[in-house]
Image 1 (cartoon, helix red, strand yellow):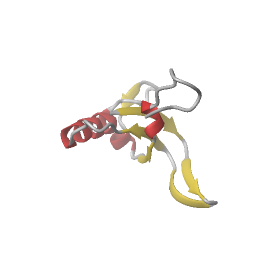
Image 2 (tube, rainbow, N blue to C red; image 1 turned 30 degrees about the horizontal axis):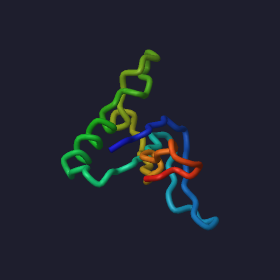
Image 3 (tube, rainbow, N blue to C red; image 1 turned 60 degrees about the vertical axis):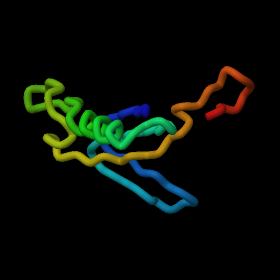
Image 4 (cartoon, rainbow, N blue to C red; image 1 turned 180 degrees about the vertical axis):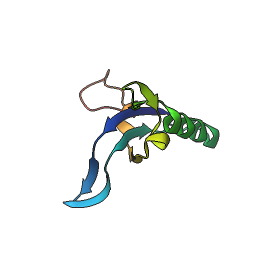
Length: 93
């Protein structure tokens, strides 16, 4: 399992010009899941993402998690995180 985590002030996902997900302050997380990933891997990663101290506190230090900051999480499936571009131009998963 792979994840790319980005702190955002707002983010949205649109499909065919329709917004299917949107958040204000929080985390945008792109997640790639492999065939051999287990439910326990999902739980571990979700816990890590929820508790990563990526938001600044009142003193300006990165000491708050998305939970503590009152933020939201927008999770987007991104199978291309496992793409292999060593052969040809399109990524092979």
